[in-house]
Image (cartoon, rainbow, N blue to C red; front, side, top):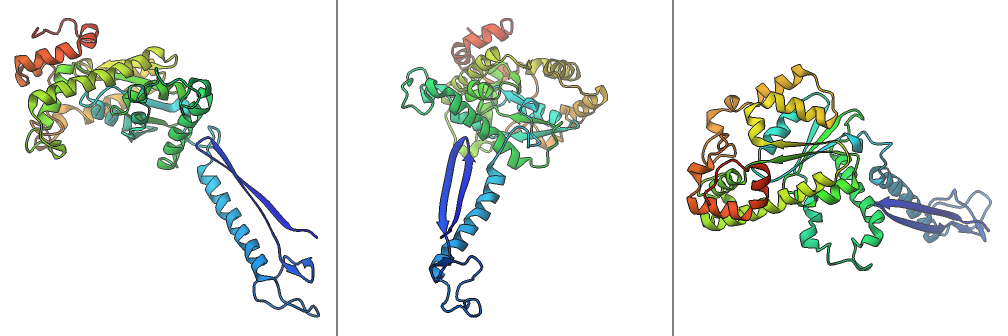
Length: 352
């Protein structure tokens, strides 16, 4: 006696799963796969199909059909998707550093798309995961199994990008604006070593001044709740140090294409810095296209009602912190972010 057998294999996020089933239609001690439920037997043959067995067979077919569809959507390889890992460009750093401005310019270039703040890196913050302490084999990110979980991180990013940009051509670039996920930059770059990276930095005093303004009553970010300005100052400074610090470590460790951009330099000579950045990333872009996006997204071309105090586009003047922060607040930021200030802004003045 033969039966209907099948096996469905799935790979989801690097995890392999399978289903096995065995079913058939029993009539007079034999298998008749052609009968449908409650239909009479073939002419001259007594009895009816065993509808329960047939129901199992039909359910098995549905599992196969759904499983094949699910597998087609969930399965992902670098070869059969339009998104190529080497064509991913990450923008890491911190919020309020000009990452929206930079990503808009890049997104308006030919063959470019932007994934705006997926926050995937926030899942892999070494500090909160305590990666230096949790090294036993039971830990999900145990060093002993790094090949396995790095492959899962890779699939998480590529699968997520694939379903959001299903029509992206293989020669297109995906810019991932990820300031909030910069804490996980090290693991993301380790999982996708062929991808490219921009480290975007800005004077932390201007960054903190922007966050303090954003949380004032009536400002664009006040929906998260009002907060004492001094408390916001120290919290924002600590967050900047953590985000940019982790991104800098990833930048130093990354052996592929990368570029470091200071917001102040980008503001002073936008076209030249964009030209230099794309050269360092190894991406060919026409000069006319760069000039076009730089002009389109210039500060002067932003409508007046969309910029100013309390707006997302608040102030594009480097050094504005001298007017926005009290001397005590400036000293707080300088104390907390001292390592980064000394490296990137050693001659930018101090309140200390």
